Length: 593
Image 1: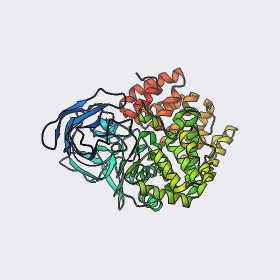
Image 2: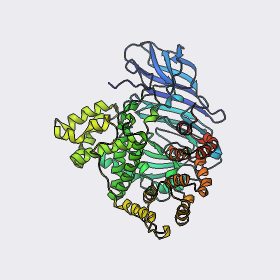
Image 3: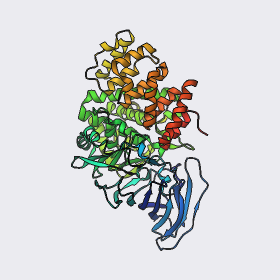
């Protein structure tokens, strides 16, 4: 039994969806998806109704498997959650068929005009269902603790390819009809669809990359190590359970770094750096094939069980492929980001607990470094306490025991006690699970991380601040991570002379690397380095990844002049952002109703 999901109207203890069959048409002109959703249900209690989640959907009719229409009602909308769609059923009902259409402003759907794509000639559609946006394009039980299989028939324009979080074809269908099957049960937030001008490149026997023609060769080169990542992950925590693992590189407006949709990770083009330095993101999404997709958080209050495990696993994959020094660089950067997040939230904030209380809030509020990085460092601290061999044995048993199911924080703690601590009071205190999960900030047993590589960049920043010319700094062999650490260790506000000197020496303003640009533009705003502003505006107009938008707009909002500039840029950029980015930036710029 999983706990009640406060972000869903579903009552799975009464009647639950076990399979979803979609037959949908994608209309780019109207910006709607329409068709039918057939829900195969298990009526556990002989209930006379089933409760579904719906937000902004237009329901035309509902028919039972007997062929007879049935009544349904849509309750008044609740903020963030949408409406309780209640359908009348009979004790013997096995299926219901819902005919419906989406709204043009459906939160999960990002409709892109040709100009907003890399190719510039064809439109594009992608979905982002996490956390509770699946209900904006499919009527279903939109809770991470409810898993179902699905199949789909999707009709799209004949010159475009459709892909889903399912078994995918790799070739264009001239009739525009694509059929999909997902034989493994998944939660609703992993429902995914993309439609666009796409090509495929194989990267191994069970993996490859999809991208727009303009990006396909760059993407294939960047992800050349994809097959090695899969085999490395399998050597750690068991066989990959999903058949194929492909990556889809989306247009720049995608709001996240990646989304772990089963069989096909959706990824931002901002990780195409030309030096394979940002592929840790792919390792992260691959790791979700075990932590998240295979063993899922039961509710969004338990989100850390997805992301904390995944970041830990990602680091282990990166270490196995690229070595410990490289992994330590990534970890130290992340620890710095985590400390900054805690500082911004406040050391005593309940939002810095791993287990969250998101009642009355959008679960997207739980998407922060706390779930990802505090969760990771909690697991790392256990590894340090008991040793890697014993910890890996525990994780292997954890994934096997809970595979294809959902788990909440209390259940995890019971499992940790029974399978690892086993009554050892000294170890229980050393692990300090309660302190990590139910208390704010970072416990005293947070691991300390050192990186000899990043020390080089830190020493260079110290030397530059003490007066050595920028052009004399030895940056040979530096990766993206060295540059990020260097920029983060400079003064919060460099004067204009130093900004010009740094730009002349290293060309930061014209960098093609989004991670570096994000750090640089924050310095430019703080120092009033206006030379960088036109490029910064272009960056904000073309990149929709929230990780970059949030710190730049936040820096702009610190002064009245910056706030005005931020609002002017945002007014132009906003139509190209996804709903999850819009919600965040609206708040930063004081534009929420």
